[in-house]
Length: 378
Ligand SMILES: [Zn+2]
Image 1 (tube, protein in one colour):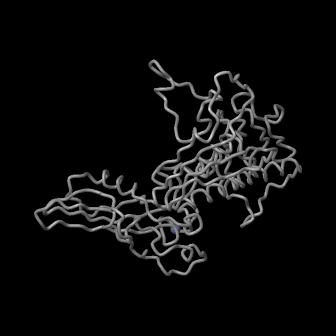
Image 2 (cartoon, rainbow, N blue to C red):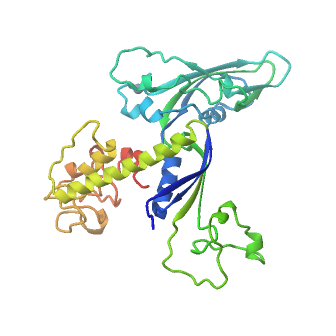
Image 3 (spheres, rainbow, N blue to C red):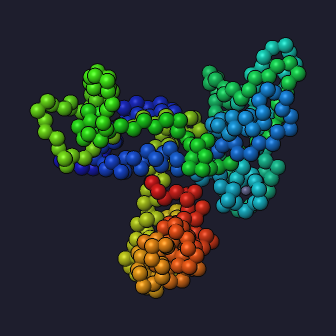
């Protein structure tokens, strides 16, 4: 029997893909789903400076609506920087996109202010010489509202104005991931199903009188053998076939979402493998090689600084003799020298109960905001 993973695409459109994934673990399939929804960077409006607003909607209402507008984010992972990784103080051409909007209504009609009124503006810093090649990787429409220059794409309504009303504002869009705010999710929906006949009994259906009539089988049920009346329950059965339907909001294409989702998952696993390998080889080196070879920025740094047996003195993994201070500091804590060992709750003295928390945020432990923002809990 072939046990290699099989991926079969059933339907593919620019912003939607329906596929079946076979011969993988449930945990893997679910990880892919979560990564596609929450870990792929896109651009979204993050700051709004409102100059004039005489519409019926309050400023914060409009700011929120602007944030939800999908902006073209092709190759965002390499074409833009996170502001937190940037050299600038607030925003610059490398880590932000400026959009402006100015609409006034001069006629006695109700006028729609839409995403098509948002105009991409060159950043004032544009052209300043700096190391970095992000901008050349951007597509022409990068950062503009989706469908703006395409015929037949309906714009997104921001608000409606009447004669004499005005809306004038400036937006700063930034790169982010959906773990921080859902506006950065490239997906509008990810349908995920396995075991459509519920042979594994992972689902219990609530019903009035007739379960089969009240819970009709979906499309995916055709892919699998129905349950036979006399079929005994297999306690050891595991799901093996997963049905995905990925629909994006247009900021990224469906293909990019799936491909980069797999790449992102690989990156996360690579940093774990890399850290575990260090444990096995008993390396006592606290310094990280910096640069492009690093599996994944903060996570990798965190792993090397943190627990995972970061040296013979700290011993990691809840060694009761080397600090940790019992239950209060968590099972993973083993930091004999908390100031340098970082993560995994290696904080013997401060009464910090968090298992994952770091005693020294600068060391970028597993509990530090940067590690959380990058996300490891797939
Ligand atoms: Zn910047």
